[in-house]
Length: 318
Image (cartoon, rainbow, N blue to C red; front, side, top):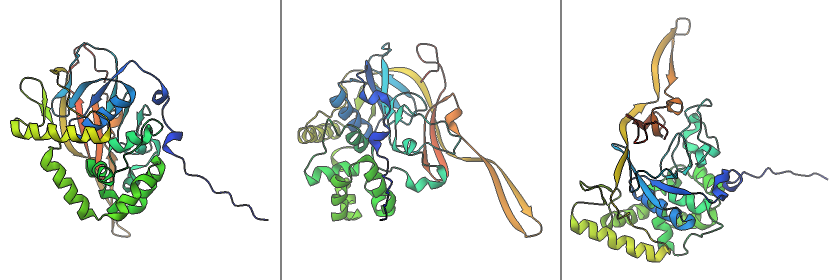
């Protein structure tokens, strides 16, 4: 008799940091796009942690409670240190210091840089549903599932790197819920659907001159976005809205733009074979104490924001 032992693929729930199961005295820090807002609102609804902080990658971190020293759970922010939930890719090499307090599929699966196309390419919003699937379920309506898959263009990976995409759906435990929708509709269907959403609500929001978060300085655009979020909140079963209190600067940040990961390039020729070999070192931002957050955005570039001065407490701790 022959026995076959099939090794089960590890799941997201097998690798979650301990803080996921703890009740913390914490607040939420979010990024400035639709994934940041909707993810922060979902996490706040599940945990009860208030949304108090907003990070603008170009200018700084802001808070409605600037002197509050409670721990911050960052959402959709690829930070080097601290607790959070994020969907970005951060591993340059096997020497990269990964933030294991961050719930991040790419970190937890330890996907190396040279296998970049295996990365988790869906949104932080989808990831939160997976992390807290014992507390909240994805909606049943097909239209809402399509909306969720348009966040951060999360559907695109299915049509470009299908095998890897399905592998990540299996890992986070949402294959049964989301794969049938992707199989039913084409990429063009999703693009049209995403366009209709963008006509109702801009993807990004920002601080106006008075320190309040808005989608637009145009009152009509702002009102249309608020109406869209009111309808969406009713359908999803939890409130989604920009915080209405005034924000204040806590820490200055500088956007470093897009930089090539490879640096100090050296070219050598093998005279016997006439073959050119290119050697270079990797720009690994995980070890840079000035970096607040960073993300590898494709196979050769990284975007980051750095701390350029101390925060209001006089230190550089992120």
